[in-house]
Picture 1 (tube, one colour):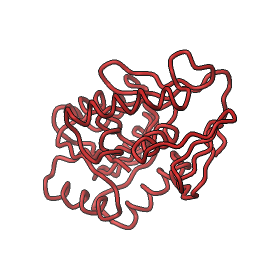
Picture 2 (cartoon, rainbow, N blue to C red):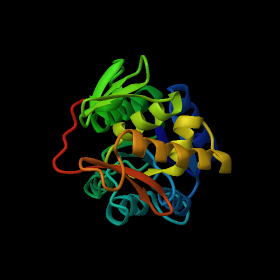
Picture 3 (cartoon, rainbow, N blue to C red):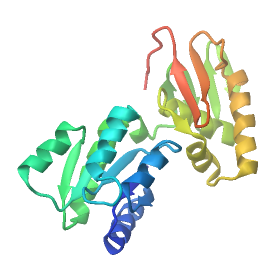
Length: 236
């Protein structure tokens, strides 16, 4: 998972990043709240870890921006030295999902993160070779997708992109996140490849702007969102 870490103490920040990356997560580090807020506007982060006392915008102000301005529902964990009950209550009431105090206890931190991710993204725990999402049957063995009495075979990159979008349906996913997930990098050439692959998926999987059930819609200046229409349900 892609985790955004807000921590201004360099040594501690590197320590936490090492814990997260050893557990298989990708981490973006921010040493002030304003930079994290900017990142929220251009990228898709799965979980936020916030320190309270940081420059330019406090962790609490970042939390309020995430919840009240951006309207994001991604889980937020506070990791801070503030242990007063009122501070904990204030953070939770402002929209935090959990609260962990310093000094960092690696096993506890990872356990809390795992619990939050498991509750928020239950579909990501599914390792079956065949899955059904929004009425589309994905088969990882041959990169095929079945829907509406059709069986479409996709390229490896098309299949990976489609499955990621279906796993994250209704979420706004940034172009940068899609390029990282599918191609493992960014750049102009990959950005053009992304646009081509999106166009192919719209045609092959009936996700165009006029499609009756699912639409893969662009978000200007940000990325894409796969949206369900007419009460389409998620059959994981």
